[in-house]
Amino acid sequence: MEDSQLVLLIFYPDPELHVLPAPVGVYLPNFNAMMKNKRTIAAWNQPMRWVLLITVMVFTGCSNAQNGTISAESILKQIEAPEFSEKTYNILDFGAINDGLTLSTMAINKAIETCHMNGGGKVIVPKGIFYTGAIHLRSNVNLHVSEGAVLSFSTETKDYLPLVYTRWEGIDCYNYSPLIYAHGQTNIALSGKGVLQGNATNDNWWIWKGKTEFGWNEGHPSQLMDHARPALDDYNAREVPVEERKMGDGYYLRPQFVNFVKCTNVLIEDVTIENSPFWVIHPLLCENLIVRGVHINSLGPNNDGCDPESCKNVLIEDCFFNTGDDCIAIKSGRNRDGIRANIPSENFVIRNCSMKNGHGGVVMGSEISGGVRNVYVENCIMDSPELDRAIRIKTNSNRGGVVENIYIDRVKIGQVSEAVLRINCQYDIKKEGTDTLYPVIRNIHLSNIESQQSKYAVLLQGIENQQCIYDIHISHSNFNGVEKGNSIADATNITFDQVFINDEAINQQ
Image (cartoon, rainbow, N blue to C red; front, side, top):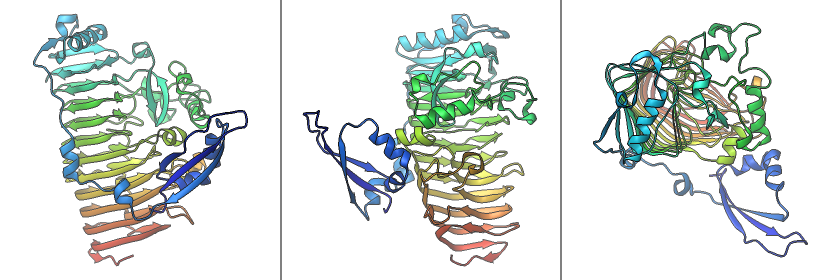
C-alpha cells in the first residue's frame, strides 16, 4: 500500500490567534502523487493562517482493511429494488395529450408531484405519443412508461430551464436540465416497456459537438468556442465556486438524457432509450442503483450508454447497448473537482449485458479522479466491427485516480477493432498536456475470456518511470484472430496463466 498514508496535521497558530486547533488525522489514498502536485499543496495552504507540521505515518500491508475487495455476492446483498405504493396516477387525468404535438410537460410533472405529495406510487404514461420537456422525478414515485407509449422530448432549449446542478463530463456546474432529472430523491424508478425518444439529430443537439460528421459547419456555434466548454475547464482548474458556474444558453453544453443526482434506492428498468443529446443514463453520487433490462440505441456524439459517476452499490444487468461512445463507463469526477470531492465509484456488478457499437464495452474513465474499485463484469457479450475495445481503463496524469479490484469473467467477444483489454495512462495528453497526479491501476483480473477477432489481445500503456500499471492477471482465456499480439509498455507484474493467442500459449511476463 505504498501510495496510501495517514497524514497527521498539527496546527501551530498565527501569533494573532489565541486558539490552538486539535490535530487532525486524514487518510489519503494517493498521497504521494498529491505531495508532488504543487497545485494541491497551494490549495491546502491558501486559506490557512496556521503553520502546518505534517507527519506522515505510512501503513503497509493494510490495503484489505482500507480498500479491500468485497465479493460480488456481498455487493448484491446490499442492493435492493425500491418498493412503491399501489396507488396509480395516469398522466391523462392531469391534462397530458397523446397527440405527439402538444407539450405535456406541466401535466406530467403535476402527476409526479401529486403522487409524491400523496405518499408515492406509480405515475402511468399510457399508450400514445406524449411530447414533453424536462421531467423531474420525486421521492417514492415510479414513472412507468407503458408498452406502446412514447415520451417524445422537445429539442427546444427553453424547455430545459431553469438550470440545475449536475456534472458535465465530470465537472460540477449548472446546466440545462437533463431530459429526465432527479436531485436528492429516494425510492425512485423509471420503468416500463415504452420508449424514451430524445429526438437528437445533426439538426439540433448533436451539431453542438462542433464536428462536421454531426452537422457542424464553420461559423455555427458549438461547445468548442472559447467561452463554452473551455470556460468550464477553466472553472475547474481555478476551482471557481460551483454556484458561479452557470452554463445554459450560449454555452452549447448538451444535456444528459437521464440524470439522477444524490439519489438513493434507484431503479431504471425495461425502457428503450433512443437518440440522446449527450450521455444517456448518468447516475451521479447515487447509492443502491439498479439498471435492468434497458435497451439503448443512440449513436450520436458522446452518447455513452450508462455512466455511473461516484456511485456505490450498483447492479447493471440484462441490458443492450448500441452507442456512439462507451457502452458503460464508470466515472468519479474530473481533475480538480474529482480530487476535491474524492468520492470513488465502488461496488459494481455488471452481468448478462450485450454490447454492439461503441468506443468500449465496459470502461473505467476517463473522468476518474476519485477512483474506481470493486467491479465485477460477468457473462457479457461484446461484438461489432464498430466496437473499439471490450474492457478499457483510461486516465492520465491530470486525472489521477486509483482503479483497483476489477474482475472480468466469462466474457465472449466476437470482434473488436482495437484491443480486448486496453489500459491507457496517457489518454488525450496531446490536447490536455501532462501533470504529476499519476494514476494507479492495479489488481485487475480477466478470466475465461473468449475473443474471435481484434488487433491486440492486451494493449497497456503506462507512464515512463512511474509505477502506474501493475498486478494485471489474465487466466484461462483464448484470443483468436489477433493481428499484433500484445503490446505492453511501462507496466509491471503482468501475468498470463493458461492463456492462448492464436492457439499459441503466452509465457509469463
